[in-house]
Length: 511
Ligand code: SF4
Image: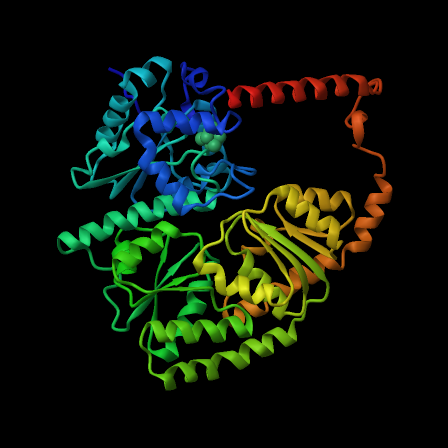
């Protein structure tokens, strides 16, 4: 018998693509939801609907959400990752994860129409999990149902919870239930933390690699620049606190360390499932982060209170750190009007830092939902007249750029692309802004160079715009032997056809 588990890079051409075609992120979401509910996934989908409330941005406008959970799993030591989904989805996801430097194989259990509907796919997944569960190699195996297996009700919850000491974590991450890749990180991080909490409840667990510290620790939630946890540890030190593990963790045993905290710093507000598990473990969660002067002052105060730190120690921490932050902010001012949008979940924090650095920020868009943990930042920004848009769609981000005509647009790839066309200097949020220190004094000085440098490039953009004027625009964009003839009549015909189709669909819904 051939193994059902194959490396994704050797994806065979089975019927799986055919089975998945037409029912992916480009297909009807309602249809997928109905199918998934009928196949027994209502409970999972209801929980996702509550955890990840949807707004105008109710389906992926960027990458496949499963990329988020895939990355979380791939970054963990001794963790195997297996995907079950259409071949095209798995190809895209593995391509992207290797593009971003994953140095691990991604397992893939392929399917075709028959194995999908007959239940054989579940058996194949089960075989693959048993075959992979080698305790010498792995602490955990993460198996993910993508859109089609979720809609078909492949019951990962029926997999054994553990095989030969290797933990089995089955998650559903469908594009029609998890809106963004940020929230998909929460799905996996939350599932693992929950698993670890149950282990803690049932007996002794592994100690942290360097042993348990003697100070109460603050667990940190959110992916951040590698130097940020070090900076956070320095901020906490005068209060007699240590920085605990960062969730999503890089190793299974860190999950126990995270649960062993005095309080949780909810630096990224969208980890709803993770915060729920910390809440069940009796750990208080503090929102926002130590960004700029105001943000750091409030954060030290709130963390200190959550950890019952005496007043004089909280004041001491402020006395040590706040002047340094003020000095860094004054030394590296940012001048210019900025609109900012992204899907990392740290947009509001970055906007606060920009404002404290002197920038005239007008609009902050985030693909993430509004949650209780972002309220402090939202209040702070809105009280300064800044528009905060949760679940921001690309259209809203672009409209803000058109309305405010910023000196710099910080955004996602399509926003940056549009800004360039308009000769507005722009920066990618993910690659150039969120990949910098953000917290404490290090964060206060980190953004100015790149932001001011980009704003100063305005003239260059104008020159380029003049130089390329008319190139790559309209129906004749591209390189041709003979310039194509514009056919507005065809476009009009198609528009009328689409309108008719939409009207017919609407009429069917009303019957
Ligand atoms: S798994 Fe991702 S890429 Fe595939 S159909 Fe779903 S949302 Fe789209």
